[in-house]
Each structure stands twice: as structure tokens, then as C-alpha cells.
Length: 234
Image (cartoon, rainbow, N blue to C red):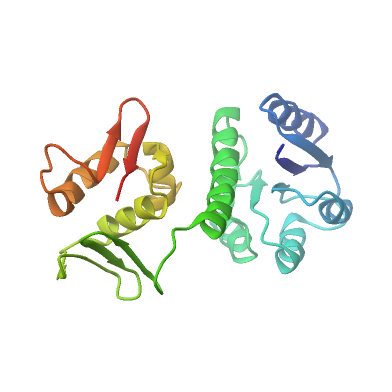
């Protein structure tokens, strides 16, 4: 299904540029240059993402964000011409999911858009396709992931996992048999603003294999898919 994006930007040139580039990527785009009108469009179109400028006529972006967040969990990417930490914090406190300061590259803008939409897709998959669990426990033969206790065990013995190792294992387990790219893993486990490289994922995978694989050199639980990423087999 085509994902819908609402672009709220009162600069006609920038609005047209953003809409053009989003449509080239296959998104369905609605536009508005007015805060009050944008609220009506959001109600009407039910977008999957809102790109929201701070400086708008009638209602500014902060107020639009606040009202949208009361009604919906739609991801909101805020844009501002000012690199002011107070503005950024205020936007996030109002419920924005991400913040981009003008001027920005189209490449960075598209990366932020894709990250937010990818997060929504996986949240939906998590709610619809999660593995059957007993309470908050995932069981794979002798490997048990107990999310109530924030603990993983093999043959009943707790594994000494660092917090990110546990979060990585839980994410992989919840998407058993799916090929997950390094970029997606980084986004979901470390967050979009993590400044480390994809090598971080490889290192944590190696550490996990040493703790959950019978033979870490020939892994059967966390399998490398050449050129694509990793797949958890259980």
C-alpha cells in the first residue's frame, strides 16, 4: 500500500521540492502552507508521516504538533530555520519524533523520512506478527529470553549480557526468520541518532554468538546473510 505523507511548509519553493522528491520515491503526498488547514488535511487524509515546519501562519508548528499528538501517534518530523536547542527541545516535548534544521540536504531529509516510516512498519509488524510467547518469555529450545526479568538463559543458566546485547537478541528473536539489514538493526536497537558505524552491529553479533552458539565459528542461531544482514533462526 502506498504510504501517505503530509508536508506542511509555507515556503512554496521548499514545499514543492519536498513533495516532488517524496513522490519520486513512490509516496502519496498532500501539502499545506497553513497550520490550521494542515490539521484538517491530517484528519481527512490520515497520513503515515507529517513533515511539519515550525514557522506557519495561523497556527505555528509547535501548536499543530501538540494538537496532532493529542489525536494521533502519527510520526512528526519537524523542520526549522533556526538551529536553536530551545526550539528543538520544545518540539520534542510537544511530541515530535524527529527534528531537522534548515538548510538540510535532500539525502538527509529522505533518510529521516524513511527511518520514521520504517519504524512505523516494524511497530505494526511487532503488534501483528510477534511470536507466540508465554507471558513476556520467548523460548527457543534451550534458549529462553525472559523480558519480564530482562534476562536470557541457556539451559537455565543466566547469560551475562550487556544491555545492548540483550536488546539486540530480543529484536532478532522477535523477527525470527526475517533477514534484517545492519542499518535496520542500528535504527531499531541503537536509534537513528547513533553516530557509530555498522561495524557496531557486527561486533555485538559476534559477542552474542560467543554466548548463545554451540560453535560461534559455525553459527546456527544467528546466521549471516551475505550482502543483506543477519537472520535469527532460534
